[in-house]
Each structure stands twice: as C-alpha cells, then as structure tokens.
Amino acid sequence: MSRCLVIINPVSGGGAARRYVMELEWKLSTLFDTIEVKFTAGDGDATRFAREATEAGFNAVFCMGGDGTVSETVNGIAQGGFNTNFGFIPVGTVNDMARALNIPRRPLEAIRALSHDNIRSIDIGHCNDRYFCNNVAAGVIPKVVEEVSPKEKQILGPLAYFLRAGQALFTTKDYTYHIVTEDHDFVCKSPLVLALLTNVVSSFERFMPSASVDDGYMRIIIFKEYFIMDILSVLPLIMSGSIYNSRYATILKVQQARIELLSDVENFPTNIDGDKGPCMPLDMKVLPGVLRVYAPTKK
Image 1 (cartoon, one colour):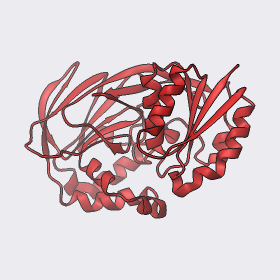
Image 2 (cartoon, helix red, strand yellow):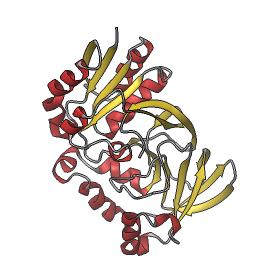
Image 3 (spheres, helix red, strand yellow):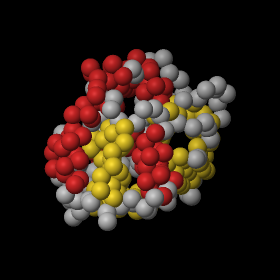
C-alpha cells in the first residue's frame, strides 16, 4: 500500500496554501493509497515531518509553500536517507525551485501536472550540517533577505527583495575570503559570494544559463569589488543571463568548496535557500542525483 505525506505551510503566500489543500489531496488520492496531511506551526516542523515520514517508509513526501518550506522538507528527506520521492506545490514569494524545475507557478496547474511519469533525479548541496536545493550566499544579500518582512513579501513579491537590495548596495563593503576548491586556492575581496546549484536566483531565470539541476556541479560566483558602483550596468547582464562572461564576476564550476571569512566581522550574514545560514566557514559539496522529485522531464 502506497503512502504519501503532505506538509502544508499555512502562512505561505499570505495564507494561500490553505486554499489548495483539498485539490492537492484529491489529486494525490489518484496516485497513492493513503494520504496524510500535516500543517507546520514553526521553524523546523517541515524538516521533522519529512524526516519521520522518510524513516517510516512513506513512498513520497510533498510540501506546499515557498522556497523556505521546500528547503526544510528536503533537509528532512536528506536526514532520512533520501529514501522517498519528493514533490512540492509553489505558493511562495519567489519560487526559485519551481522556476528551475519548470514546475507551473500557479498552484492549481502544478497540482494537475503531478504524475508518476514525471519524476527526475536532481542534485542537492551539503553545507556544514545542512542541505540546500538552490543557493548559499555570503555577504550583502543574506542581510537583505533577513530584513524583508512577511508583509513586504505579501504586498510586493520579489520586488521587496530588489528594493531592499538597492538600499543595501550603497552602504555595504567588501569582505575578504579564502576560497578553496578541488582546482583553486586563493584569497579575494567581494561584497557577495554565491554558491549556486541551478540557473535561477531571486526569480532571475536566466541568471546562470549553463547551470542545470542535474549536472553534478555548483557555480561559485564571486562578484568583483567594483560591481556595486556599476550596478546599472550589472542588472541588464543578470537579467539577460550574461553575467557569467562579464568583468563583474568570477565564476568557478566546482563539485566542492570551502569559503573562509578573513575579515573581522561579527555576526557575518549567510543564507541558505532564503533562510538564515550557518556561521563561517562554509564547507560545501554537491551530492549528484540523490533527490527524486516530481517535475517535468528535462527538455
């Protein structure tokens, strides 16, 4: 008998997730014999629910929420040994993972598209004691993400992050990092360093067009010291997917990396998939093809 757990974040999308619970249960009842639904009440609930279901032998774990809920659920599946399939319905603000996997961002369309015929294996990243689906950031962007309020996200959507970022860019500074990968060992200065598993960042679907969710690599993007001064020139490059061959960033295609902060900074901000990240240094590696996810097959 096949079993499925559904994890609902009731506050995602301004409470939108609750509106689609019945539709999701009905669709999943055509795919599984037993459906169990749990609602999160705080941080860590999705991870705990997913881990327990994975360890109990559930055939699939689904969640409905934003990128933070997706990341929490994947962490639980990872802690349980990746021994279940994963699916999600996007109802968040940015929904980067839905963009990266070509999952419809309208919840009803995403629900109707669910099928056992559409399951693919994708890469997951490991950073210190956590897992990530999309990105790890160190520098100015994590601080911006932390400062965006739920009300701002509900009213402005992704624009809330861009407005905060615009304010922060003119007050930030460069930090000194020691970066070690399988092929590199160097010291650099940068206001922002990203480790990226997919082609998408903050709703920019063409940010890294050469990247794929299943190519076995992550990209380390090190923004140059002067990119803030030329931000009006940088934005079109980001939107057109041309930042990778510009003078504003150094990009490394790697399978593992260690990023150490050499600057003397207290409470240095890092971020994992939109949530507060761990303390420096960051030890990261790619886990190729370990997560089976309900998503359209690769084009």
